[in-house]
Image 1: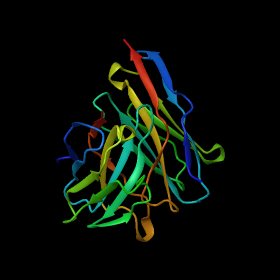
Image 2: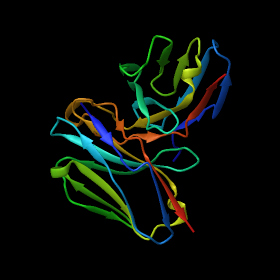
Image 3: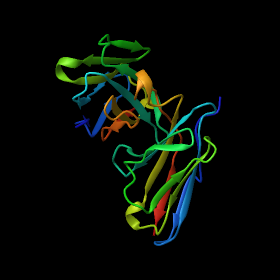
Length: 115
Length: 120
């Protein structure tokens, strides 16, 4: 069965600190996609990144970076030099060949960046 | 360009009433999805449309829930005989092609702001 676990429910950091949000997934498929979304207080889910199971290269986009490790079934997200605007709930999601259309979301990690 | 839009942003209704929630996807996106998000949880899949047809409605919780997309663009989620447990944020998403062919489940889904439904 497909499952996404975000063990960190809430995290608070002081501005300019680095923070890593964990995501562990389960799937029996060898072909799958992983996503991160940001949900600010306004409520709209904002797409951040998509990764397929065949590409384990880490990715960096500005202050954001992602570490994909198939050996541990993890797809962790790091924010460097956090800012107050990073405060939001972050969701990790999985889509695989078996489920196809639907995304399986974790329960989210609520990040608060304190000025 | 315009993103996914949903109306109303908030809906308060009484138990037993009928409600309709509307979603307008990104122009040109053939795939449309409905999710439900309860407080403190991630979104849960309800139904997926490819064009006008519901290709996967396995997430609809019961027969009080129904969705249509008659012209392959705007979709309406309909809930009959609402119950207090239906209170949640209903999210709509669209993607360029959705599932199918060699690239099942690969398209990024872009979400709307949601409709917060409160059943009193």
